[in-house]
Length: 133
Image (cartoon, rainbow, N blue to C red):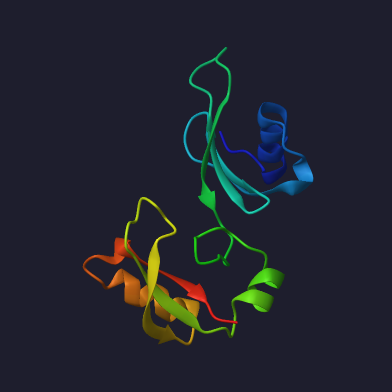
């Protein structure tokens, strides 16, 4: 059975309570399984069988912009606080503590450069970056 885009939105609104006008990119991905986005968040929903309560999981965010911690941010925030600002590489002395870090002295011209550099490190989990203003 094939559902129209409006039919999928109607089903999502009924089963999960999202306003129809906020639902984007709805796709049926199996019998009683659906993926969709609302406000930049990607969801996966399903109903196990007839009579079962619909289930819903967050698959992640679809925002093209994020801060140094991976938190999705608006385009306006990105343009004001991230784009064009130099990033500095920091090393966590005690990663579990989260706030005990040291400046490595290494700088990057963009967030993307910092992320690429950290991804290439053998112990990249011990590093992060923040922005210089």
